[in-house]
Length: 199
Image 1 (cartoon, rainbow, N blue to C red):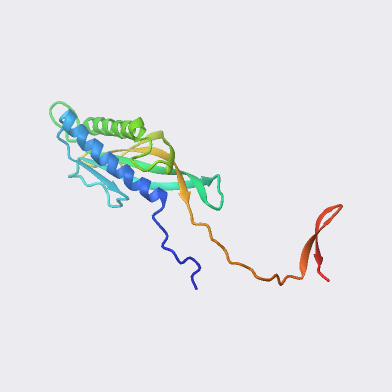
Image 2 (spheres, rainbow, N blue to C red):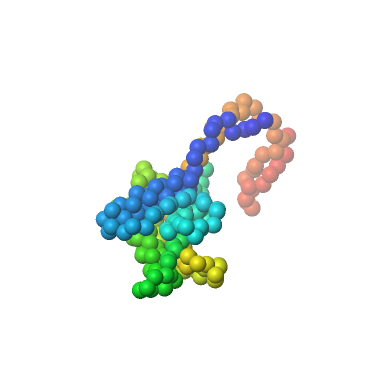
């Protein structure tokens, strides 16, 4: 028989994951309007299919891991890590090679993602106060294309983003015990508490 009879609510790290995706979508599309660049921007959460050669820019938000500390019966503070993967493509023309275009686009978008997520305007990632106690863009890494024959000159970078999230859980109210059936009790001695049989 199940002992947990209430519905387990969406966890904080799930809310944060979805909020990251929503914020990046809103702000990157706004930057497209402000800066007037023509590339299509697609933001995904947990996408597993490979970047396609006909895509220009793809941003993928992935949950990595969490380490919990300050744990008690009510809640736990987790340092949760997310990956923000940016994929870009480029085409060669008379003025530049495709690899240069792709890498320039990759650097531009990984920079914008970092600036958006580290902005003080998003210190709570648009979530209610109390869920998040800090956000940190830890670092980013640039990776070589896995396909050397890639005609779209794919480039990729990964931003490591950490969020301190408070996770809550309902405390069990217990049951009232009318009688004690144990035959063992704790008795105080000069050497400390000792278990003793009751007589």
